[in-house]
Image (cartoon, rainbow, N blue to C red; front, side):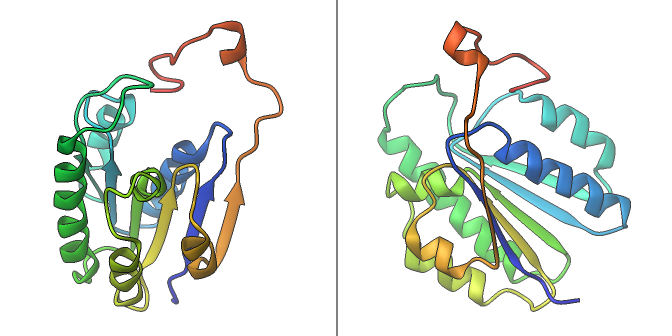
Length: 171
């Protein structure tokens, strides 16, 4: 089976959720999944639930604990570089059928990692490996590379009424 490159981007809710849904579907088909979460560190609900699928899904985080609106710091660059180094190893490992790079587009937009380096890593992956890149502000280079691009668009969102991220729904 040929592996394609998917991008979930845009300002709307659901990019990570869609990628996690794909991970569950793949695990249900006995496929091996690696999820690398960039710019995230913490006790997100998906980590707890994915532990039940440890035989098929592996998840690692490459970020620091942060709050919404918090600025970029040098630690962010360090964690992103560690993440890209790990991803290079994962993508050369034929164990995984699906690799999800969660919030990688955001890390790229903040220039925490080099776009050409990421594109090179993706291009050199095994031919059957599917790759998903999530996060708002996907770059033109990533969009050109992709075989499938889904843009999440806000039509209406309860955050405008002051609703913050809720455990089990947004985090």
